[in-house]
Image (cartoon, rainbow, N blue to C red; front, side, top):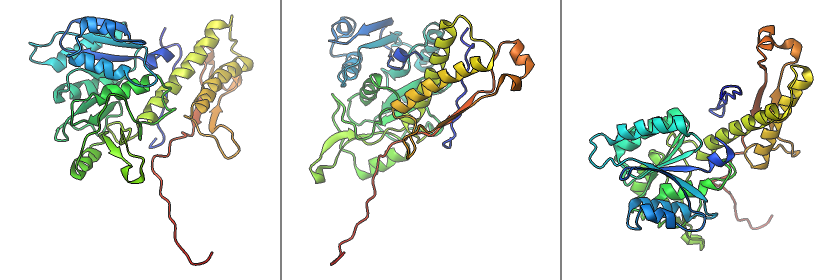
Length: 343
């Protein structure tokens, strides 16, 4: 059963399958559909269902244009053209979908309506999916300040920044990169006033603007990589990935071993599986190293004699805990200098 391996992650900084982390789902509100598309070479199959002038084609094309190019995208949809409460129908459809297929991670909405975004944001929070979306203004009334699974962008022109960011993320391990400073394909920077930038920053919205012209390094780039609560996208997505890797390694042990004995050596084998996953986190730049180059994580566990007999009788291994220091990232630099006549 799905509950045979339980990993509880606690965020103490204020503190899906591997393929699933790269899977993005787009919710279409103009067509009844449920299809995965191979976009590794072109969008011919997408164009059969969505002509080039449609919003769905634009979303998919922007998603596929990133480097490296994503291989697949899934589109699920209902024709809600005549529906009065689209948000409710979308959430109902997503609730039905996730009972049948939960092996995907990021969600994009065709329709960028404030009410729809607000309700799907709540759904994403509950169902551990990442909603990438955008609005063309900062005047919305919904309070997203507690949302850690909503990536909310300000995009004044009609480019789909949400799709570009999801496409960039789809081919990378969560936590191994940050979004800030990244140049994305098929996206044109907005010309925002200082007032607009300040308003977007106050609501933790990511922007796509041109920076560093004055030092001859001018490029269109993301202003940041925040979720709506003001924390970093890679912080939460890397936690999800670590949880997945731990479950994967322990499952591999249990499924490929004739028997993992409830002994000290059996417990050690489970701990080693856990450490394999954490070491993968080190390799991908999620977990820090200290000044000696050693991984900054700790794993604690109990011996057989320290585990309650009731748990041993149920063949339930308990008493394993871990913590790690997040590697984080440098996204701003403050250098102080002075000019003197003599050193």
